[in-house]
Length: 568
Image (cartoon, rainbow, N blue to C red; front, side, top):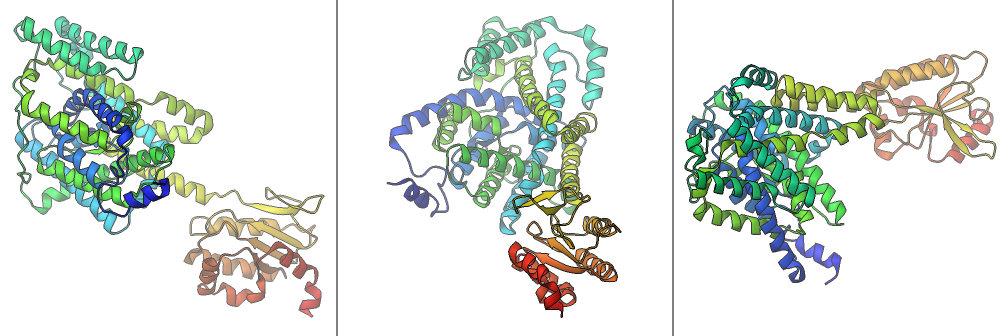
């Protein structure tokens, strides 16, 4: 079957788009990739529960129904949906003052957040809001995740040392570490250091080695053999096994509670939307495959519904997990479904040994997760290529670290919108002049600025709207105020203008009056049909006349050269 036919078959059904068509030749490799990913993901998702503040077993639950639901109902063949550090940190930040971390009430609120995120994702699909993923720029996303990484890694230092974690917030936690450092439990620190060395050593040898799994299994065995809990090393204790009960989050379903959680749910929604869409796009481009953002929104919504009704927390499309599967040889959601089956076996039969797991080992895994999120290479690249955007990324990271994760994502959204508006507010407009060989060349607005004696062609390089309309007016005035040059026609080259709002229409009419006062004719070049309709609606066309619009540069120049004949 041809590639195009395969894609058509896979996208004509509402489910299994990430699974079909099955490639029997690669099926063994897919299953092996799922097994490898399970070895890497199980200790990682257990670490995410420390970030989210939920019981350890809920991390395994995020791999069960949520991952399976997206694998069956999403469109991306590569995106891995599960527990994620960013959304886990936002959850913990919002619920810190509402319930005791790890309590049944806290878990119910975390599940309610997953439900609210699911509703927002499905609603976004129904009303076509998938494009919002484009409004969280790569710059602020790097800054946001770096800030989350610093916060997560810092928060685990007390656990690594075996001291009290009294502070709330990154700065307060660091102060508590310095104040209580003399209370460090050296056996606990030894466990932490051992886990860190094993994980880092395995990563140096090969990224395919499940270092966290080796470290966790080794420390569980040592804890059981040497009864480490009797030496003062804190362990997890009994972890419940069996399938999660399907139930509605046990909270008071009232408007005040929803109103309180809505800003957090919106923040989570934006992170899921941006991070998942960016990851799906990247891997679809890498493997020359198609995916549907709208279908993925439904899959992500269903995955979070699965999380909400199985007593766990928000799930998200994870770039790191997606890369784990891809590097292990996974090329479809078959690998993720294999992981689901392995985790199912663990939940049913193998949760008993987790009782011997030292808390310090889990803190070490989470600490490394936090360090992985600190994207120094990305920040350096931004600094070298776009200095102003680097400071935006740094400011975003600082807000996350100093104030909080939820405030950080709101700040990141605002900065992204400000950055977008800044680019449109100060477009790099130009004038077009004739080259020596008769061609056209754009140059900054300055003197000389005439294409031919008496003709100025001014290129506006952005949509024309309220924020930059005054810039057009000021630049037109600047170009036409030179007393040493006589301008007869002023042409707006509009190939980059794809929208003209009410304020811009009003400004254009004022510009026309200014030019008419100086006996200058206003004309337009390369106006798209829908933009022409907007100019008609704003009354600009009636004022300049239909003969003021030119489809080609040669038509414009010819009309200008014969202007006196046509005017007479």
